[in-house]
Image (cartoon, rainbow, N blue to C red):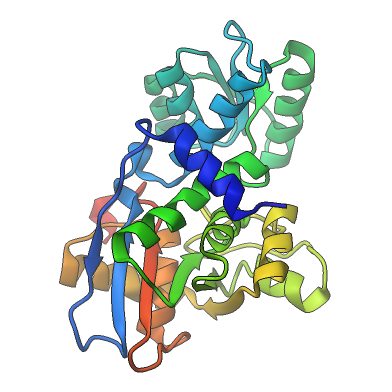
Amino acid sequence: MITRADVDEASTRIAGKVRRTPVIEVDPGSFPGQVWLKCEFMQHTGTFKARGAFNRVLACRERGELKDDVGIVVASGGNAGLANAYAASQLGVPATVFVPETAPAVKVKKLGAIGAKVVQHGAEYAEAYEAAMAYAAETGAVYCHAYDQPEIAAGAGTIGSELLEQLGEVDTVVVAVGGGGLMAGVAAAVEGRARVVGVEPANAPTLHSALAAGTPVDVPVSGVAADSLGARQIGRAGFEVAIRTGVRTVLVSDDDIVAARSLLWEKYRVIVEHGAATAFAALHSGAYVPEEGERVAVILCGANTDPATV
């Protein structure tokens, strides 16, 4: 179970390794209350996941689990792969990244440029994941999950504690939900001080479906944000924290996400990926309407996208 103490420990551990990302205020009158944007898309590798990656690898090194000659292994051709490969390179250990054979060449090239060894295996992510787990068991490499490990989630949660330091007080934190690592960490970080609203694409409602069923369940995944919010099941860590802290969920459509992403560019010259725009879409679409005077922070979690498509 992830707690604020875990997040505080992560903050100390990764200090100096990650960027303290800025907060900007949305134009007054745009929404009821006060709204700020937490610009986490400016983090190393363009995604919040660098925080969890550093926390995981450093914690394993502290416990003597990290072999400097073997390093880490991860199954992800997306943001998690990039973040963990970057953390490994900065800490001077090897990173092996398993991706499906269908992974886009541009992502494979980017991973290689960071210094990771890329292994293409299987037609789907599940096959790449199984191969990565087998590699970890065989070599002793530290496995870094994309979202469902306590240290990964606690590292992501440092965004929440950082946000409270920057704003002093906030009533609500709005965050996109895929596998739930970011949501879990942030909810633990702000527990007792702010509520968390988890925003999901209607085409990938992992948390919404889990709360309705009373347990994590598989859901079909599709839509414009599936590349970053495409987990088929909410992680156990995310589900447990959501239940404990009372995370509220709202759903937004693909059209809502695209519209929010366009507005962020047109009004604020902010370019984010569809997954990050999902959080802002909750306010822009009216899926979440703040009360008068409510202080709301929206986490814009990543910017690994093609600017030409905005």
